[in-house]
Amino acid sequence: MLAPVSTYNFASRYKMNRITTQMQRITLPDPETLNLVLPSDDVKPKKAPYIKVHVNTRRASFKKQPTPIHDFINFKRMTGNEILLNLENHNYFAITELLGALHELSKKTPPKHVDWMSHPTTASAMLHLKSKIDCMTAKQLCQVPILLHRFTWMDKEMWQSCEKNILRMLHKYNSRDMA
Image 1 (cartoon, rainbow, N blue to C red):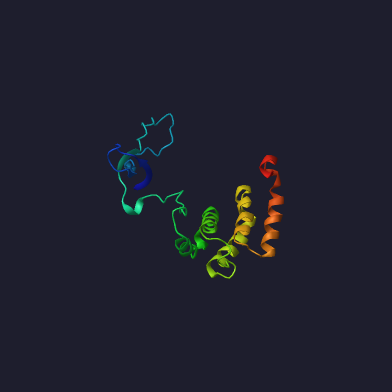
Image 2 (image 1 turned 60 degrees about the horizontal axis):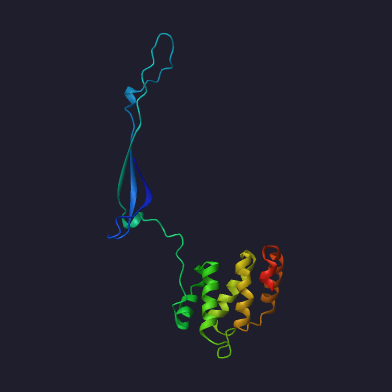
C-alpha cells in the first residue's frame, strides 16, 4: 500500500530546488499470527504484532508535484496589448489578479484615447468585476472606484454597487486613510 505525501525538500544552494515526495509503505502482520481470542484465565494473551511503516523520500515525478498555491500573474512587466490578451481569460482570474490587470492597463494607456466601455475585452472583464464586488475585501473595494475613474466608466449600477459595498465595509477602514 503506497500513499504519496508531498513535501518540499531544498537541496544545497548550488543545486536546483527539488520537490520530493514521501512514499509510505505499510506492512501488515500475517492474519494467521494474530491473536483474535479475548484474554481469559485459561488463555494467555500473546504480544500483539506491530504494523510496520516504511518511509522513503524520493524525487517527485511530474504527476505527483503539488499544485502551486500562490501563483499569480505579474502584470507590471507586461505591455497594454499583453494585458488585453490575458484579460480574455478573466473568468479564470482571482479577484486580485483581475484588479491588478485592470489597474496596470489603466496606467499603461491614457483614458482619453480609448473608449474602454465599448472595448469587448475590458467590458466583459468589468462585468465580471461587477459580479464579484459583493465578495471583495475592504482593500480590494478601495481599488474599484479608482479603476472606474481611470477608465471613465459610466455604468451607474456599478458605481452604486461599489458605493453600497464600501458603506457596508466602512467599519474596516481607518479614519486617517479616508482623509
